[in-house]
Image (cartoon, rainbow, N blue to C red):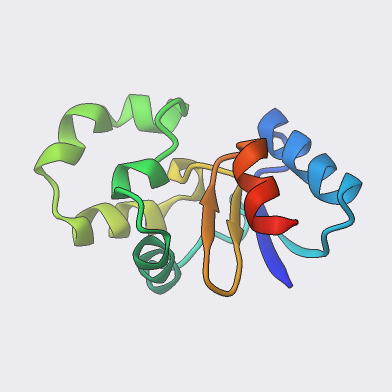
Length: 117
């Protein structure tokens, strides 16, 4: 079963959840604000995803902007960035779908169809 990590108030997460339900895909849901991913989880997902680490940041979020991370991230090491992500779920791009051998960051219907159907 996949893990669906989201922020329930986020409209994109709501669309993604509806898509999962409509496609009868079973998942375990987790609220990213109440149960933030750990450093270990984020490190594993980052490695498994093959994506640039910046893709894991919620760049449109208020916290990201208030911390001026656009300017700070390029000078930070991967480890520092992962620790920062683990410090607050609101910094993490969502929804996240974690499967046995894949990670989906954000909701792109075509990508989800390919991996989940």
